[in-house]
Amino acid sequence: MNSLSMLFFFLLFLIIIFILVNFLLAPQSPYIEKYSIFECGFHSFLGQNRSQFGIRFFIFGLLYLLLDLEIILIYPYGTSQYENEKYGLFILVLFIIIISIGFIFELGKNALSIDSKQISV
Image 1 (cartoon, rainbow, N blue to C red):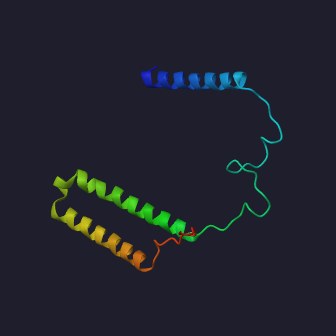
Image 2 (cartoon, helix red, strand yellow):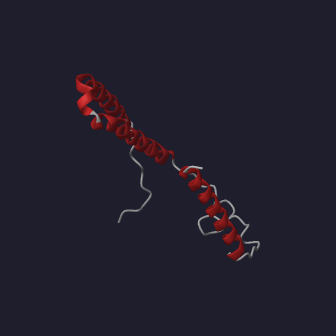
Image 3 (cartoon, one colour):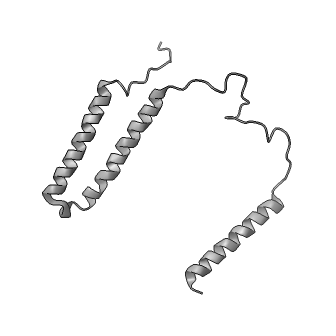
């Protein structure tokens, strides 16, 4: 038996011990409120649990995800820049131009403007 399999069996044994200790020592007092619907600390009232949510928040989140993925795709070029030479730089600049055109298009469509419902004084 090698050390990796010993570690696996030890962790499995430790997990089983922790679960058993939890079941034996944790207080068990189920009641009807524990099994009722619970939402953010408040009970949901009739008609209030399904309010409309603006699609602009999802669009904003998707835009953030795309820009985050752009950073992840640019990172390998930065770590291996000495091997990429001019072709790698050309592909990177082309990628940034395509992403920038999409960002400018979204700005032109006002996809990033979220209307505030707060009253300004």
